[in-house]
Image (cartoon, rainbow, N blue to C red; front, side, top):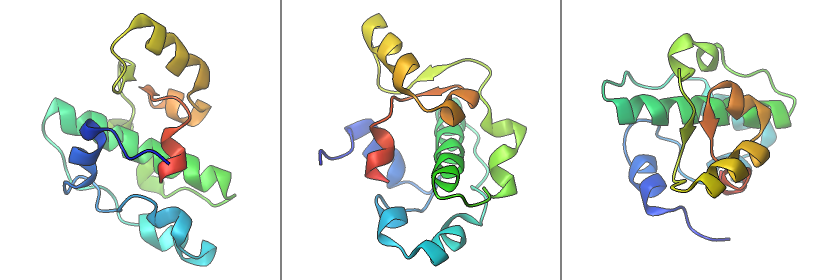
Amino acid sequence: MRPFPPQFRHVLSSSVYPLPPQTWRRSQPTDRLKLVEQPLRDVSTAEEVRWAALFAAVVEQLCYQENLPPPAWTRASRYYLPEPWYAGAKTERMHRLYEETTPDILKQHNIMVGDRLLQRV
């Protein structure tokens, strides 16, 4: 498995969301909701807002995949971006790929990252 791209590693190591990579998959299914029950810390910059929306969408998607109820905080309006964010995609070709492969829950949050990001959680 390839490591997270540098722009993801920076944020994953920040305090926006304190869930280390692959913690979800390594945890016991019965403990997974405990990992995500606390809401994200307040954010202020545009970059932090995008990353917070991404993390909320990922938590919601992971819960959906496990037939678990997502935490209520993931549905707060602040976690739905007004414009699509193509995280790490610099070309129109990548934009189209992300639009085609991003799971629906992430698309609802206007987060376009493709489907490979979830393999690393």
